[in-house]
Length: 337
Ligand SMILES: Nc1nc2c(ncn2[C@@H]2O[C@H](COP(=O)(O)OP(=O)(O)OP(=O)(O)O)[C@@H](O)[C@H]2O)c(=O)[nH]1
Image 1 (spheres, rainbow, N blue to C red):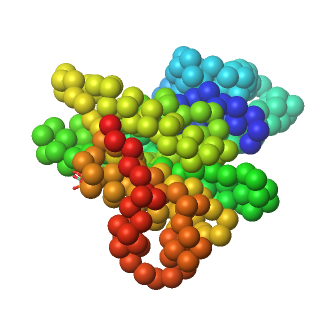
Image 2: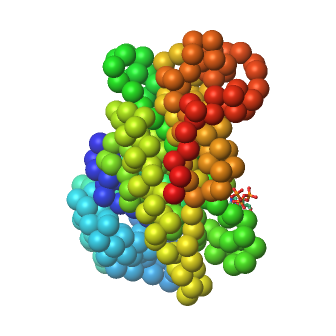
């Protein structure tokens, strides 16, 4: 859907969450009006009820109202919706001419009727495209934070892994993020406010990303950064900037300003292990960051392991990775505050 892809770039993904339900409801009512009109034209009797007459113009029809409300939102001032608005106006203009003919006992103008059917078909096709787009979009993004969800970020990771396998010089780092003591936020303010906090944290994390980076909601209070074409050193510096920014940005919850921090585990994606193992390594690094006091980043540099231990770190040998990390403490350096 290339027409709509540029729409997605401009619009906050959360805007799409409501869209699919709204389109359905508005279009159902428009469709009922179209059916009633067809029946009246076929039977040559004005079977239109008073309720039907509530839909008899662009401004009264719920679909017209929905299109105008959508266009009022600056985010949706896009040629796609302007075109939809024009089509819908045209539909009701033609429909009203046919009703006038019917009411004045004139024969149905077949050409006009064909135009009505065509306009209705074009409207349906355009709305179906929008509906599909919004359903697909909703399934790719998390409704609380507006960030990509786990399924979508898995696709990003698979793509990065594929890119690395095609071009041995390209690389990619990942960072797993877990909010510190988030249970307390829920306990103090309740789950709904906890959701607001998640959304605000997500917004801070998102504001720190480069265009080529991705940050996704990975689980409950966990997020995942995917940082293509950056060295591990670069990723450590970049993620530590994110950590500092979050700690320095007070969030507004219930008219109170609170500070939320997070811990970060960083590692590389690598060609000789699958994505799952890299995530596991990021999780181990995150565990270290938590263990060392939270609000810090830790990393595991896979390139610094010996060949034998690299096989353990890559998950090829089922040995307790944590034990090995303790042994190799110097290879797993934590960035202190
Ligand atoms: N409001 C809200 N809370 C969530 C959501 N998903 C997970 N949580 C909460 O996140 C909290 C995670 O708590 P814990 O795993 O104990 O960790 P923590 O309190 O963050 O402590 P540390 O991670 O050890 O620093 C739990 O209270 C979950 O209920 C969500 O979608 N919304």
